Image (cartoon, rainbow, N blue to C red; front, top):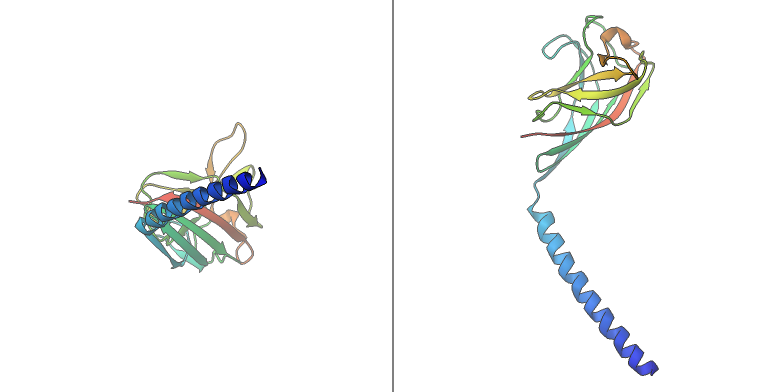
Length: 164
């Protein structure tokens, strides 16, 4: 009896291993067919899409097919020369956004003036983003240059968007 159970277990293990190898071959083919690209970019603080420029940060991206994942780190953001009441923007994203997009990911913000929840917002056909805030029952507002404590504010966050 135990000999028969051993034969059944060996047969099942062989079948399972064959199926796993077949699945791995399929996955290998699918992975190889994806277009991957990764690299770095320089996010820059600005007061408009084509406006005055502030300090630079660090950015890394991964593009898989038409989807872009970015990590942005901006420390001690210097807003010298930026117009106080203008929308604070980060320009220099690696790809243009296909559609309007709001990213509800977590933004780590040090010494940033806001109330409610902050998130990034990318507009269609743009390579820049704004930081926006909303609160329950309130309107969505953009973070302005004056909300940034020049030389002190840090922003760290991830974004995800679709490109052409």
